[in-house]
Image 1 (tube, rainbow, N blue to C red):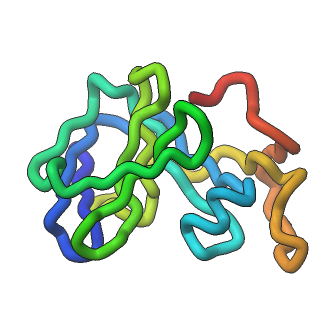
Image 2: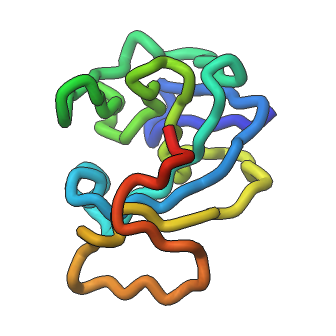
Length: 133
């Protein structure tokens, strides 16, 4: 079991496993996270559960049918479900425990911040890889 929480810890969750971690460079993730890219852990929905604070999650529809979740108390990004409900995307910085997997790829590199160079050897995709979410 891998535990995690928001900055103020009012939202707490558990995941049985993490399928993979991805770095997203799209402009919406950059703006939502205030960083060059956002790192998300991908977890099957049936292997994820909130321990407390689910009622304190606010959703923002960033594009039609796609919602970003955040804590109403501290403003931290929060875990959110894919539009089909089969996957939970967890901002990787929320983990309190080691998820035991390491980043697998960079996506939306075609719209990355011009001031950031991707210098590692992970696979890079200009847009959404076929096997994600």
